[in-house]
Image (tube, rainbow, N blue to C red):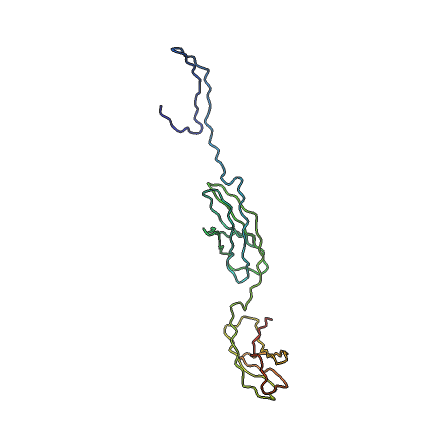
Length: 222
C-alpha cells in the first residue's frame, strides 16, 4: 500500500477493524489533525566552552584566543564575539584549530573587553560564559632596536668616558637615552645621551689595566 509524508494541519481518520473469518466489525472513527513537528535542539545539554584570551595591548588591532572543545554535537560551528567598551560587538569564526582572531580596530588602554563563544547548530544557538580582558598600555619600545655604542679610547687619569651611539629612527615619543658605565668595583655611573647620540660619563680614578663594562644605553620613558 503506498505511503506518503503527512503534512501539518492535514486531517486524518483512524478506525479499528476487527475480522473473524468472513465477518468484520469496525470501531467508531477518530479524526485527528496533524500538528507541526517539534524540532529537537542539538545544543540542549551542551556546555559551550569559555574562551581563553591572549593578552591585549593598546598597540593591537585584534583580539586572539582559543577554546578547548569538549565533544560538541555533530554539525556545530563556533563564532568568537568581542564586546567592545562602547557596547558594539565584533565577530569572527573559530578556526578548525580552535583559535580565533577578531578584528577590533584601535584599542584604548585600560578599556575592558568581554569575549564569548557562540555555538550554532541547525538554527539553534548557545553562548558561553564570558571572559573579560583589560587592554594594557603597549610598550612603545617593544620593537625598537637600541644600537650598540661606540666608545672613545680611555687612558689612565681620564675623568670621563665619551662616545656616541646611533639613535635609530623613528624614536618613540617620550623616549630619552642614558649611557651607563660599570666600573671595576661595580659602581654604575650614568649620563644623558644628547640628541646627536653623544655622551660624556664622568668617572674618576681610572688606572691602566682597569676593565670597564661596555657602555650600555639605557632607555627611559618619561
